[in-house]
Length: 138
Image 1 (tube, helix red, strand yellow):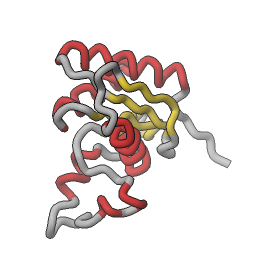
Image 2: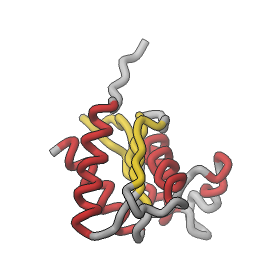
Image 3: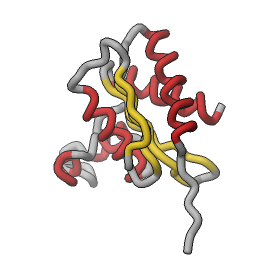
């Protein structure tokens, strides 16, 4: 047997609150999703004004970040023509995201979950995701 450390609902709520604070600061209402280490959704919120189309994207960014244990923007660079992961975005029914805004949540070198953010530019999404992690890990 193994023991797994994972995010819980209280952790997810802290991360969403931290992300929302950053989103308000930059003036972009966001969709924010938190998953456990296996990419299963724990919590999701669409801020008032967050894009309806961004709901699924945020969830899939968190899924990708947790499952792959890497940031979605790193997949973006690795999935370009000629790169080692070219074409990966079409894997798993198109759920793997290669656009910035999904980050793994790492604790003591282990992935304990993922955060995915969507509605802004990829850099804005990534900034809000990092704020969510910072709210949890300080």
